[in-house]
Length: 241
Length: 269
View 1 (tube, each protein chain N blue to C red):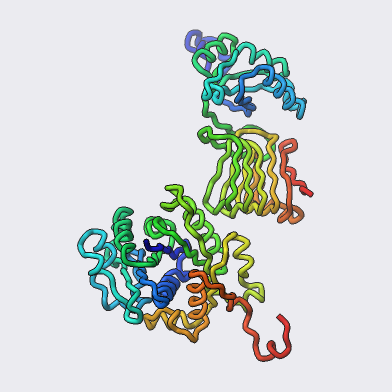
View 2 (spheres, chains in turn red, orange):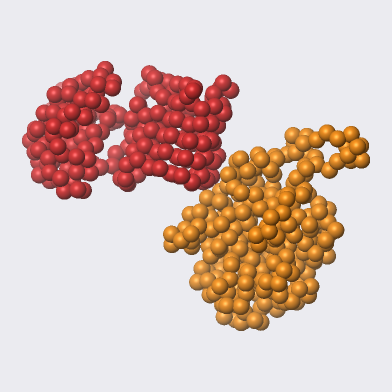
């Protein structure tokens, strides 16, 4: 509600604040060499230029600060803007970094935030937050029923995933075995994440909240080596070979 | 130092107590001093299966609470003097078991005994957790049936993550699959999961298959572990399992369907 409504009750309110959440990619930096950042950022954008053009982005400095690596905030923001991304937030910054960001009109985001429903056509489920851990994960034992694995990067399993097990990754998921449990990729909103498996028998598959349950998997893909990706909010399941 | 074996499953009624009794007897008969402990507080039945229900004075909980010594509670088996049974309490509930208490009892038993078989209750709650916590080996009893397989899988996950060996980053518990109540005829008809189906779902090495057998009920009623019924298929299968566990190489005998007289003459599978 507008604050002005209290001061001038005779005028009807022409604006209001509504609660809403948007899915925004987070640029996580683990190195502070600005030239390398500029080069690698451009490479990533070139993979899907239309997706990234004018896309809002929040940059996350937590890994840098954990390693006590300093970075020039002004220059970083300039590099991000050069790549046609629009920086709209800073996360995991030190008090000095936050002060610099605020002086450049970049808002501050907390380290933990959730993705909520938005109005997309496909069915959505809520993404989950977990404490930050090492990036890509490799699991070489069978993932048993009731177990839950979470990777903040990619997740590779070189064994089977049993029914009743859950594997989640902020990045891609690779299962070099039978996938019988639930697999959720891109759980923090990465719509580019993919799921690869040798034998699709999953109870549920999901990329960035768009999911399909076992019943909706056609017999043409069940039990086969497949890759699963998101195309315009639809899950596409394609043969691997 | 004793080897602690947990006989567990997740699912109830699949043959844990039958198996515990059989393998404990089998190990003792081969000359190893063995103790078998009933962890099912409140629903004890190991003493019935072992035929010592009329000789129970003190039980596991009494020992943990210091109300009796281990020697007072252990019951020596009538058929084999290297086999001892520690029955569960029938009147208390499972909260009477504590991790420290169980540890103390197992440590004391380890001084004298070669093998300690822990008969786990069904489920994944405290009783089952304590039965498997200190184990070195685990016999995961599974029926060739979907819910039993799913529950065994869950139990395997717990063995790999919630045991003392897992928590202290030691060498993990050695897991053995024991498939019970197997009926090759029904597998042939497609009614029942086959050995390969179960191994595929569980990714676990098979220790042995116990065929569905009337001799199991007879043995329970008589209070004699079925392994002592040398004529029965189930008894022989348990004997094979004990031999394999101790390192002997024995072929799996009860996986093929029984061929009738005609089947034998006219061949075919």
